[in-house]
Length: 110
Image 1 (cartoon, rainbow, N blue to C red):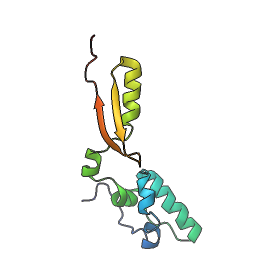
Image 2: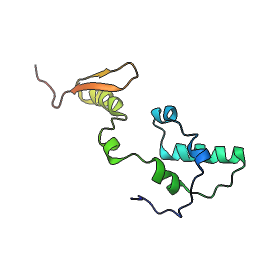
Image 3: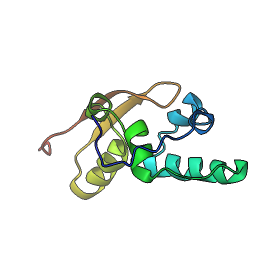
C-alpha cells in the first residue's frame, strides 16, 4: 500500500541501484536518500520526473522495522540519567548494534 500520494513517476533502476545495502546500514532518512538520488540524476544528466513521495514509497521503513527501532534511545537514556538519576546499561556488538539494555523504571531509594 502506498503511504503517500504519488504521480507514479518511476525512479530509474540506474539510480535506485546506487542506494546500496552498505549505505542503508547508515540508516539515512528518506529525505537524505531522495536528495542523494536527485544529485546523482543531475550528475548523470537524467531528468528528474519523480517527487519525494516516490522515494518515500520505496525507502520508508516497514512497520516491523520501526517496531524495533532504537534510534536515539541511548542518547535519551543518558539525558534522562543526567536529569533524574535513573541508571541504565547497554550492551553493543562489534558493529555498534544494540544487543541488550537495562534501565531503571523508578529511582531506587537506598
